[in-house]
Length: 165
Image (tube, rainbow, N blue to C red; front, side, top):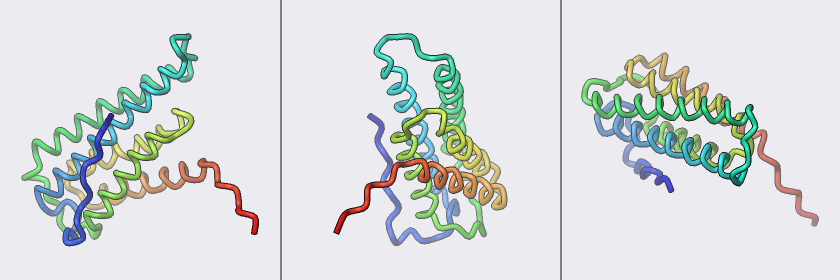
C-alpha cells in the first residue's frame, strides 16, 4: 500500500518551489501519485479474477503504466536536481501544491473507470516536467490542467442522496 507524504505545516507559507526542501516535497508527492497510479491499475487488472482483460482496459492500463514510469523519472529528476531548481515568483503557496498533488493521488486511487484518470495523470506529468524547467508560467499552466481535470473527475463522482427532513 502506498503512503502519502506528510503535508506542509502552516508555517510553510512561502512561495512554492522556492527552496530545495519544497522541491523535494513536490517530488515526494509526485512519487505518491505514481504509487497510486500503480495501485489503481493493478486493482483494475485483478478485478477480472484471472479472466481476460478487455482490450480497451489493457490499452488504458499500458498507457497509465508508461505514465507512471515517466512520472517517477521526473520526480527522481527533481530529487537529483533540487538544489538547482528553485523557482522564485511563482505566486503559489507550497501548501497549495502539496494539496493539489495529494488530492490527485486520492482521485487516482478512487476513480471508478480507469480510463477517466488519464487527463489527470497527464497534468501531473506536465507539472513534474514544468517544475524541472523552473519556469513559473509553465508550472502555473500545469497546475491549472491538474485542477481542471480534478474538477472534472469530481463531477463524475455520484452525489450522496439528499436527506429528507
